[in-house]
Image (cartoon, rainbow, N blue to C red; front, side, top):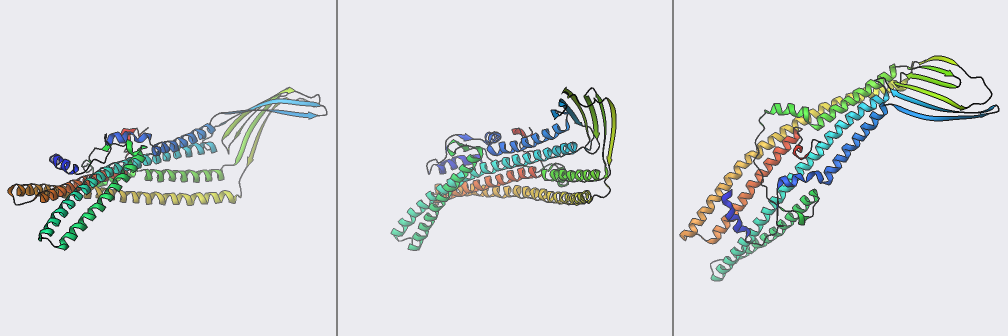
Amino acid sequence: MKNLVPTIATLLALAPPVLAQGALELPQALQALPGTLDWRSADLNYESAVRQLEAAQAALGFKLSGGADYTLRESGSNLSLSGTASLGVLPWSTSADAARSAERALERAALTRRDARNTLYLALHTQYFNLRQAQTDLSIAQATLALRERQLQIVTAQNQAGTATLSDLLTTQQNLDTARSGLVSAQGALELARLTLASTLGLSPQQLGNPVTPPEEPSLPGESLEALLQRALASRSDVLRALSQLRDAEENLASAERDRLIPNASVSAVYSDSGISLSSGLNFKSGTASLSGAVPLVQGSGGALQQGWSVGFSLSMPIFDPVADSRIRTAQTALQVAQQALESTRKAAELDVRQKYQNLQTARAAISAARAGLNAANQNLRTAQARLQAGTGTSVDVQATQLNLLQAQRNLEAALTQAQLAALALQNALGQDLTTTLGGSK
């Protein structure tokens, strides 16, 4: 493709430059992604899940509270200060369930963030190469207009000389009008492509340089399709999310069954001396142990001070509890739904990988066809130039073959672009983080 530079430069010289000066390389544009609004929004959503996990883990930890109690009686007033410490010590506590659920929610949030980043990464590639193609399309439209104007000049002269009919002149004029319309359309498409890419990068169109990085021809993965399918099922975000939701359903069912079977039982011990009391307790239902104490500051004259210790145990057995039984049945149904959702997700993931793999194969095959077209266009240009030198061809013929060559180059770049985008789409379908080089793993 290097031998096309002089020809393309000649065609671009037919009209003044329309793009901003300066170069915008694809790696440079990719490095700007972490600063975009969509990227930061994905990070904030993940941070929200981190804060929720921290809150759930804090609920598991040690808690201390203080209070005061004041009583006014005929015999006097009493004032005491108290404090209570509590800690979840049993693994089936509600706080422990909430913490494990928050951990899985954080895992899903990380997967959602990865998907958002990959989507942005793919969108930037698409927009970048769309801008390159829009630039080439404008060059083709300008060259087409120049050719149609030249052809109209020739046909007009031929019509005046009587060697071209009025119908030929009208057809040539119509071709010129179509070329003018195509130029307007190409200019609008280029402006829209620049606005789209600039908006993604958070820039104004005037700040956006000229995209200079060409697409590259990708290769097929070295693994077999079956190996790719297995890798996708182990790494894809949708499969991992469905698996996480299945674990949520399993734990919800276990929690409902445990809540139905474990009685509401608690044990407590109290010691008091001279108004000072110290008590401890353990609730088997909630899995929480507590320790509290009270110190009297002001005591009335009435009433004897209690001294000694006591131990208590309470038990409440759920014999008939239709609400708890209904919760178990609901959780069982939710578990079945989650199991079916996981199976459906796996099947959809397998189909998606197969489609993306086929798309890449098809796109790579299109590159060969585009290269053949480019070779033919090169040969046609050399033939037209030879005929012009021999006096058997015209400069218009050379100009037309130059235009065909530019179109063939555009077709090849479009084929390469589709192949590169197909390769990225396949990597995304396999569950790969496309943004690792941009800090995507952080």
